[in-house]
Length: 281
Ligand code: C2E
Ligand code: CA
Ligand code: CA
Ligand code: CA
Image 1 (cartoon, helix red, strand yellow):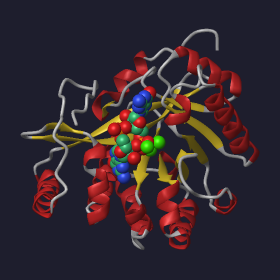
Image 2 (cartoon, protein in one colour; image 1 turned 120 degrees about the horizontal axis):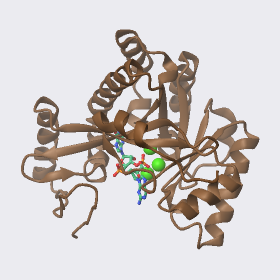
Image 3 (tube, rainbow, N blue to C red; image 1 turned 45 degrees about the horizontal axis):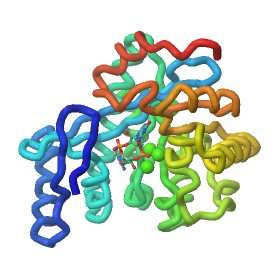
Image 4 (cartoon, protein in one colour; image 1 turned 30 degrees about the vertical axis):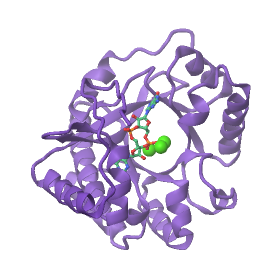
């Protein structure tokens, strides 16, 4: 099925085949992509709804394939997770994010970079040590990063996930529950896990100015997060109307096409200096 993506000019329409021969070649292609420098660090700004200022950015991978053009993450991340390649990719993203963070700091721009982690990353006993090494090499404080973890990644192996998250938290890294509300998890783990942030899934946000059910879910989630002492972020803000609703509801941060699509990491500093929040906050 053809898939239209408006970000950039390239339209990619042939999903990778699921046959084993294709899978093998996809794994080879992914490995080559690292060597050939085909991955790109894109970032999407996170804005404080209280001040209107950019306070962070989410790191999102892009793959510029020599023949297929721009390949979006949903076309290879699931495969990368199945095969374990995601661990290589996560390290690459962390490394790139650290370089970006250093570069921003040198320009006097203080943004927390959020990086997505997968189940496989959480199962890696050495992950906290790798992060500690990364921070030391780039002379960054742990608070330079936030790690986004989906509910499903946690529920795959809640005990191991909790151990890893505890260690990352002790190191001083911020943890965020991504796609909140879409998983099959109970609320009990929210109480147990050392998280700082709750990220409301865009499926509830995209249309919330027209869908009262969605608006109620968003409002309740903001209240729930605040009652638990967490920062609440909404993703998928595509209109000023939704921005304003979220301000009224007291949501802490927003991320979405209305403010910015994901952009190349190198363009972030310029974007931050040009950004102006809607008036009448
Ligand atoms: P996610 O972590 O939930 O990231 C948010 C996705 O929503 C991004 O899609 C972003 O471009 C999109 N988005 C942001 N604002 C809007 C909006 O206003 N409207 C709409 N319709 N969409 C919006 P993207 O970049 O295609 O990434 C898709 C998913 O792929 C991510 O979902 C994440 O689960 C995964 N992913 C991307 N990069 C990485 C990575 O480096 N590592 C891992 N493990 N997963 C990644
Ligand atoms: Ca995310
Ligand atoms: Ca998300
Ligand atoms: Ca998602």
